[in-house]
Image (cartoon, rainbow, N blue to C red; front, side, top):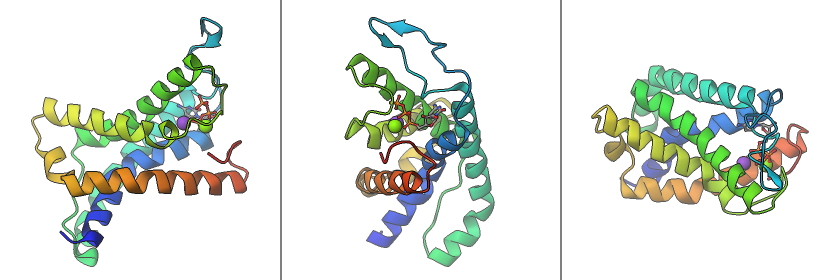
Length: 185
Ligand code: CTP
Ligand code: MG
Ligand code: K
């Protein structure tokens, strides 16, 4: 597959994992997942990880995946790339994994003395990718699909790892400029 196809595949397949964080930023607020609990001197997760943000983020990603399924054949024709559809298990796993990866990173941030909102370069940009890919791989294995290996070929995986940090940095900077996010990362 040529570079254009690889990049388009990577973007399409990861869209259900990209949207949750942004939806969570818009929906966030309300009860924190950790209920205010601490571990040692720091919060378990902090006020930046809420039930509402997590559930809305998960749902937004899953709904997007189902929506993309209806557009797949048209988009494949227009772009000249054989895009994948998202089996239900994958449509649920990608956004949930993205949210769990982000929550896991907050746990690590608090353990390493970083306050809510503090940057954690590298981790901030890839936590949700690792979470999404891991849970999608697990769902794929449990449901005996061959979706993961067919979609995330090595070149596509490489494109995801290069492209996601760039997209993450620019999207968050834009959200900050628009006043939607408290920090530009
Ligand atoms: N958010 C949420 N629930 C989540 C993830 C995010 O409610 N599971 C909302 C919160 O309002 C959060 C905002 O989205 O403040 C930005 O997300 P993020 O940058 O991940 O959180 P931070 O506030 O930076 O907190 P942390 O330092 O723990 O990452
Ligand atoms: Mg943050
Ligand atoms: K984060």
